[in-house]
Image (cartoon, rainbow, N blue to C red; front, side, top):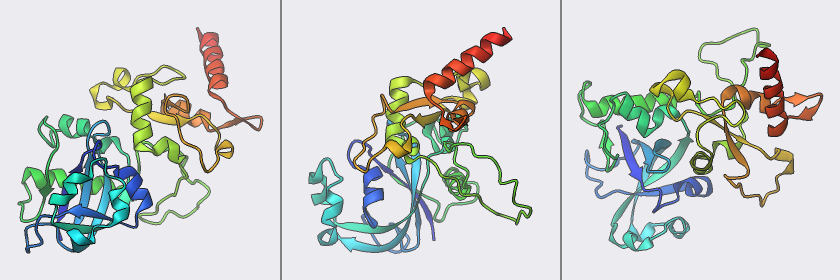
Length: 276
């Protein structure tokens, strides 16, 4: 078994919607020759190009297919289907996991010298690579980040202090608003509103330096009980960037009433003024 990193062009194929809608994903595989292309049981990580610029998806290769077997349902997620005519073979992917972590972003890779400061293109694999090979080290980081279930954009829930036993390797499941975690909506929100907290105006880069550049949470303004099945998120009016502290307060209630952005801004300003 080998680990792979492949890229998907954000402007060509909508992997976000395809991942949610399809039972399996068919991926270009030029060869099935042993030791060359994607092989059965290989694990594949997918990097989404700008404006996402992150490794976000994990798959397992479960089969191969030729051009005639490419599913019609998947064609719907291509913006330009003409390039499909030149693809002869595919690897069939089983979906494993989708995450959104700052430690899997292009900026993080460059800042930590995991890759050169150049666009991520093509494919990389750790097959037959030495332990000190840069590609193996890079892929090992990606593997570890997917194995670590703590996700940087999660709403910061408290530890389960009611649980008296703490078994080794125990994990806590946290319910997270999917609109806040949608990578496309998130990227558009930050493009429109910037990366400064909408409540307290904090900038992580100014507070912690370049290490924290571009880190911020995204909050979904509309309460979930007001959302219908046909609802479509508007990144400009429905989402705002917030720091984890303000995000936590926005998910609290005041005397049984859900907190609003305007109310929290007022509470923050009053509290800040009283301390001056």
